[in-house]
Image 1 (cartoon, helix red, strand yellow):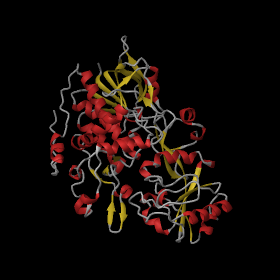
Image 2 (cartoon, rainbow, N blue to C red; image 1 turned 60 degrees about the vertical axis):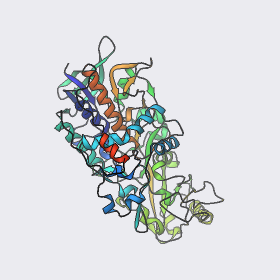
Image 3 (tube, rainbow, N blue to C red; image 1 turned 45 degrees about the vertical axis):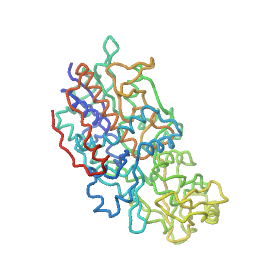
Image 4 (cartoon, rainbow, N blue to C red; image 1 turned 90 degrees about the vertical axis):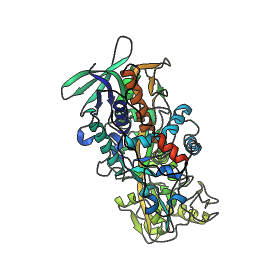
Length: 524
């Protein structure tokens, strides 16, 4: 065999799989990245790099953000814990109970330990995601539950560190390596890949193959077929290399399609965002503070409850719903009372601005008469319940209008008034492959395909209809780690020679509510 394990892809999940395979005894590991080196990293490079994971005690965050209390006095007493039940509740709520029960439980069970593994073995550095998740109330920063930790330098740092770790561990990386098909032996086992690269067409042999090459979000033909006509011209927030190659070749080899093939993660972004993700902008085109204002379509009408929940639990769904509005765009409108609550990414483009609502509406390309009527009715309906509190679902709601606004329903009455035009940008698709707890790809005969594993966006069944911020990267790391370990075990004849870091000391210390010092990991 040319290699023990071949990993196809270059994002968070693929790199986690390669590192895990090497850690667990696979001596010759090859990572095949379709993109040139300058464009490597898949969607990971464009991400905000937030990881959602369970923790029962605030002390469990010390290893990631040891200076949090010093930097933000009151952090320990103010940050809510995030037990297994809370993560499960959030995932079940946003997926309408459709999430795969076995896979979601496994992801949640392994979420904290895998984040520790990323720090210990992957050598990643973490920080609080203040700019996106922190909400200032008075002189305090309030934190939502679950998704508050990200890697330093966000997705750029996450991707860069994964590749450095791969290189330091002796993992071979090939760029501009376009995998076209799987290579199978006479017994139906996957034993390599067919790839087009600098040496032309080659068949590279391996004892196991891990597919971590993303979904089909860049493919307009597949988007139109599986998601609907309005997705044909959708802007792609991230990589322009994710055409569903891995999904296609796996299904052709007998893999079982699994999950919500008609669903995807899509985000409200500015209408002048580029057609594909720009590496210097990464995720700065996002516009996610809509719960504190209103969204009006080109017909001049409000069309959805902007504040049924925190944006972390609605944004991935609302991006797609925006695309279904006339002309595939809407206007977000705010007044001076909430400008301080808008996440910093809003500053990457200039809004429409006026000292009067009428002056603002006159600048927008919509039904202006209807828009003014809508805004007047909205203001008249505001102010029930409350009081306003941006850090909680405050119950400050409208009455007598449809659609209602369930929280943070303040009148638009304080100049200046501002508006950003937004559309929906696709991030990744939900349809994938069925896998088991060892990340083995399951065939349509309901049996594992020998030698084939998958992880990342290609895992089907976790996300349906919607998505909770921070679960995509967490899933990628968890199942990448599992896939790497499983593939290494198969490649090494059923035994793993490395030692997987379990962070038992960290867990034990957390149970006692005592800070844990990061332990060095000895290389085998």
